[in-house]
Amino acid sequence: MELKFYNTLTREKEPFISIEPGKVGLYTCGFTVYDYAHVGNLRSYIFADLLKRTLTVAGYKVRQVENITDVGHLVGDGDEGEDKMEVGARKSGKSVWEIAKYYTDIFKNDLKKANVTEPNVWASATEYIAEQIEFIKALEAKGFAYKTSDGVYFDTGKLTDYGKLAMLDLAGQKAGARVERSSELHTPRDFALWKFLTKEKNHEMKWESPWGVGFPGWHIECSAIGAKFLGEHFDIHTGGIDHIPVHHTNEIAQYEGRYGHKVVNFWMHHNFLLINGEKMSKSLGNLYTLDDIEKRGFSPLALRYLYLGTHYRQQLNFTWESLEAAQNAYTRIWRTVSDMGEGWDDNAQLAKFETAMADDLNTPQALAILWANTHNPKLIYKFDEVLGLGLKEAVERFRLEQADIPADILKLNQEREEARMGKDWGKADELRHKMAELGWSVEDTADGSRLAPL
Image (cartoon, rainbow, N blue to C red; front, side, top):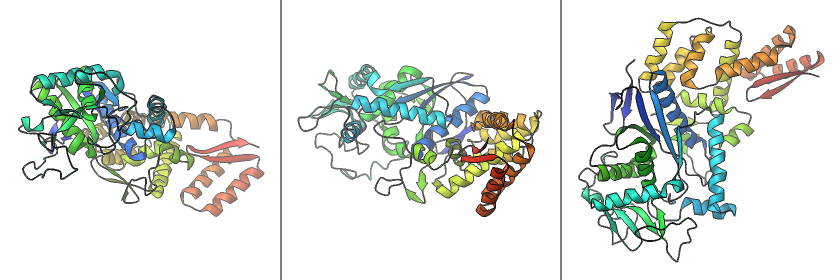
């Protein structure tokens, strides 16, 4: 099976060949833990999980490293404004250390609910300050770092191909086009490696450094952590397309400034998630979390199924109606599979599925192949090793719950489920009352209906 992935660096789909045979080094840009993760954030980690699962099934041993940003990410995603952690702490009335732990725990639990496998290494930025300082010292020694009154900056003018990931038009870029930058900077594109404390801005997280007391810039954590755990040459780096013009562009500058060669072979990015056709924003009130999803009666795995229906490089429009359709489809899969026997090997269908996933994670095509084989549980479970929908667990749970329920009640409940999926609410209520008359209650949950004797 030949794997082909779209490489943002070249804007082409390329055959994937690992640096070390049989092994893959994978870095995933992690979450900034100043608030709850929203459904757009979750798309990033489900995408990375699908990539990891696909590589694993293809026979690779994957070492995945994921950072947790708990310092240095300023509000503007550049070098201006407050640290997001300080903003979150003030909003909650807790310390930055308290909210970092609180939101990290919730974030990891959200990933577990969405069946995202854990990385081999979780790396919080505050745990690797020494490595970040050493990285900056190495850049300084090679002439890529300089000191100003408010911090230590990377000199982008020293790199002839700075901005290649984003294909930036450096010649046409005007000074101050994005924001007004300090006159001390060598070029307006230069970015902070280390920020000093100021009397005007309180920053609870601070460390000693060779340049003065302060805290690291946002971009340096990923380069330092990536190099520590994956070395100065590794296979894949993932993230969202919003990271391309600033964060990942600056990561590349740091890597290549220090090591003098390409460090990451493949840069892979997922596209934006829209909400009802609009960009997510607090002002629109559409920053939905996984908790919001569950409170409306939806399963986190239905959300995962929804994401699989759109290729990761395409924009995905989230609506409550599309999530409901995804949940109905997801439920129908495991309900159908639960009525089948053990199934059998089918190498031809398995090969079709693997070919779809090998073609830059073509999940829409993979889902179509899954639907064509719901009569074969054994095959479906093999597909699900990559898709991660927890189908075997759902089937086993359902069968256990239904084991002692009379056949006539199961038949009525199936009719009611079909009525609900068809939005025939009158018939669904009628069947519920009929089941109650026969001594059975029905509760609708995110994982389907649950029956219990009255």
